[in-house]
Length: 296
Image (cartoon, rainbow, N blue to C red):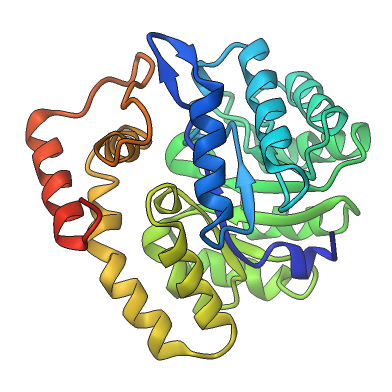
């Protein structure tokens, strides 16, 4: 499907996992994937944070990846979320992703354990040595209580099947440092929708995005415009999307984006405990922003 530098450019969606009365709705996920495929998305990322992987059983996790791979049918890459705070578990999930035909795996830094930088390096190295599949690092300290530093990312650049990083630290200075150290060897992807354009400006190549669940064409168009040098168009797209992006994070992701998809009639807003339904006040705010944007 191409080299990492050409593969990991553009808008990749961190796709939600539809539930109805506690059960994964495969048909709803297939319809969401069709919506993405027809609107410029270049990669489908199931079972990430937005996909509520933390509250799925291993059986459900595997099923979601299998459904996604089958629905995409080889048209664009499927990057399966396979991270865990157990290295052995991450290896197991990554092996399964490879077996069912995923094109790559996205691995969040181990959460809760608070590994050292050396522990992070050894974790990813072990997964990379155990499974011959392209791996994307995922740094999001706000979720995991550990920040993978640029020096550690640089060490992991030397591991042949570590092919990109999703950077969600929220620090443009840190992301700039990652690009400076590693950008010539592997793509740096935005892991924070509000910072996608600034991250592109310092050398990022794309995004793994929440917002594309509801506005895939707009996110894709903004990144494509930037990547061909049409900076004004990209900036206009960024500024237009900004209030909507903010509304999608009024509460913990993916509560608002699932509510937005429900407003659009695409699926149930159901999330799994300990996440819960969006407050009435925030639902009203979200609906208002979506109406102003033209989605409702």
